[in-house]
Length: 281
Image (cartoon, rainbow, N blue to C red):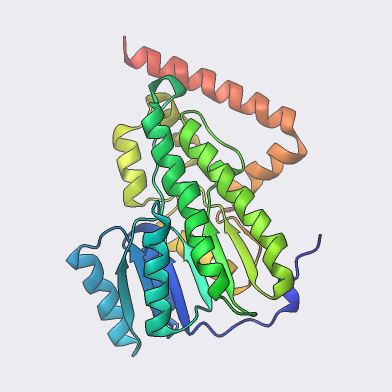
């Protein structure tokens, strides 16, 4: 099925709603849309005064406004109430971005059922709750973007919970694409590699040592670079947005030459396990 995105004129983003906009990629994208002159409604579990002040200063400089709403994405009614309030204040959104998410980097045997459920609740159920609340309010020409991950296309060691949740987000975005593009609503699925956000900093402090050793081969993206590429992809109404040439190349190899990708991963994991074992001696 060919994407119909190209047949729709690029919208004027007057109102943008972003979950998880208090920090990380969500904060970076909120800043960019404020600079574009859009009214930005940011939904998050909580906000620090510093986070709010940074966005408010940008909004004032760009003669627009940033509105803040508190909601827990795992609570469907909480999300729906925040979305309805944002729409009542600023009108139907031209763009909706779900960027709220959490990450646990642990092997299966170190992941409790409660931790697994929490990651699924925030990343996957949260994406569903946001889409369920926002899609009935969106008009032809508008756009929704769900932030998934490269781990939603090719998971990694220590990502039993995170990978499962992000594979689910990719599946959800794919379904939304087929259900809503013919109604004139564009759908984007964003799959960034590791980005140097506060969430990733916490992962590096507490993550599985073998997984962290593997990550040294892939490296991390600068947040501004990642946000710039995601912003450009959304502006172009692209379906699949993968920042970083390295990530695109790895995904290409995994699909076109799966045997080579599997061989590469096995060797890297063996090397990383050996290196971690030596450190622990």
